[in-house]
Image (cartoon, rainbow, N blue to C red; front, side, top):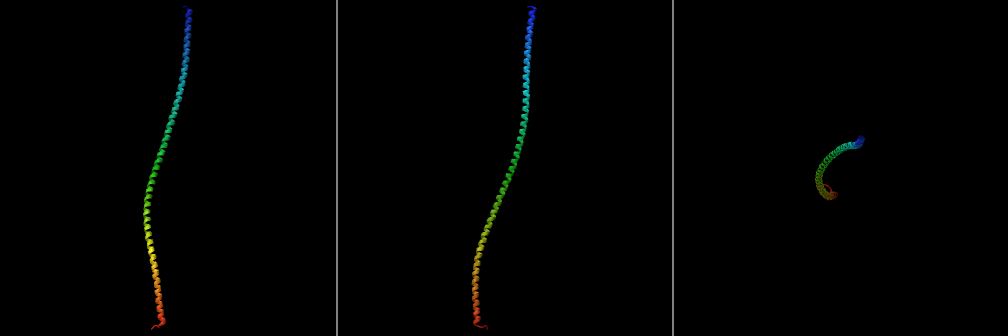
Length: 154
């Protein structure tokens, strides 16, 4: 091999190496670009996940607050129902007492009506006796008048 051939061969090898180097460089740039794209996507995903985590935490806090409000409301409702039950029991006792008192009043009214009926009968009998007494008194007065009119008092 002549020196020109050697030189030519070296040039060809150098060109092949340059091409391989350029290809490797281009491939490396493409991979760098791809890696940059992946890194950017990862950063965006991490930001999204951070936002989601914050939103989730806020949602959990909001739901916790709502649950606490509902629990407090349920406790107040339970207290109100307990008071209503107590009031209902008290009203039931009061109604029973009132019912007993009304029964006593009815019994007393019945006795009074019986007494009034007896008094009315007695009043009628008294009126009849008075009328009878008045007739007898009138008869006595008539007898006394006749006795004076017919005979002088001595």
